[in-house]
Length: 117
Image (tube, rainbow, N blue to C red):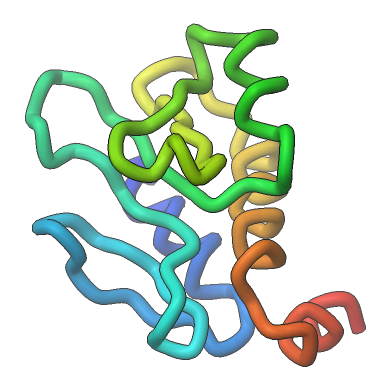
């Protein structure tokens, strides 16, 4: 499965998630309002990635530990968002956990509780 298709499957499996274009690329929203994941191929620089909301401190920790897999994305990186390269070997179970954490950061408490149930 292609990275975009796999990422789409993970995002849309979460409660009350929708997809629509944002800045010319697919993005996923909670209740069609808050973005939690953005696909990142719009610079067409031969790098494939996604950007996502992240728990406090996660961006700094992951980028410091594995800069070949994680990065501080432009525009939203200052808000703690995490960039994840998809053109390197990818562990999709780990990506699922990162996407789920992103969802938890922006979703209302009721939806997080539904996810945990």
